[in-house]
Image (tube, rainbow, N blue to C red):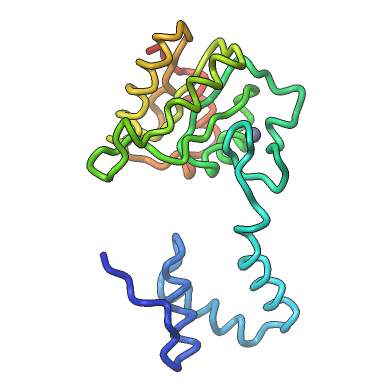
Length: 204
Ligand SMILES: [Zn+2]
């Protein structure tokens, strides 16, 4: 779907509403409420909010180890010496690291792909970042890899592709169990279900 250009065409409230409705979970009604709230709020709050949004991309980077979001070189998980390095959980996006961390059901470390295998969407085997994962598994002597890509067509294709490559390296590979609904978003799966899905993983 083609989106309208970002220009404000002399209507600042309408402009903000259009920008806000591009955010996940924000419909036009909420966007109008937020815009009117911003107009009546303390100017300090509005400026701090604006700065927090504007500076987020430059203040947050990818962890050099796992690709998770962090303000430092290494994310909180990679920097924690109590987190075991020999079990690696492979996820699509940093928001899924967040969801699994909230479930408190995993003590190992993560590898964030940032992309899924999606040949029709332009991510074929040549574009997929498999080498970084394979190298990491080899260099860090990872014993088990848990594939927690989402239960969608792209997530399953990614899981099969990665599993095949890692099994060739002699690594034990498992897939998180059902419980996460097919086509569902890991990010929004409740922590208990996510915990069970991790516990009930099956070897591939
Ligand atoms: Zn990390």
